Length: 136
Image 1: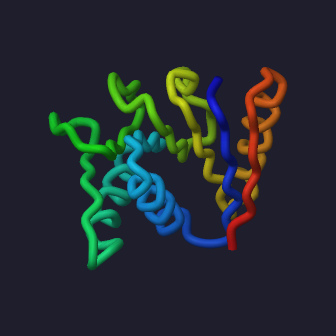
Image 2: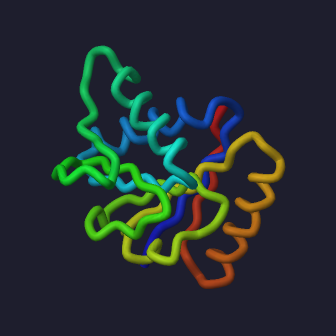
């Protein structure tokens, strides 16, 4: 069964997501990052290129036909990357259960936090293993 981790952050969502991607990638996982729209996906793509000056995180947008460990998508169901899903949207993707793990990033914005609370209740009501992390 899919394990769900919620990360309540207190700062910049893109920077935290880059750190999370870096940590998960360095542990040998393949990652699909699900964003709400193309602008967010492109912003994250750009940030990952400059995030670490000392190391590369191989990644691309889902529209690029490359086999890399990190794919960033929007309004798209991935055909691959069934290891770790990082969800940056307000809703739960229909395909989440294909992944071994899901990371839900809970941003500072109160409206988005309400969505995260609904997502948490959805997973909990269905018996998924949940962990909650508060990150400063």
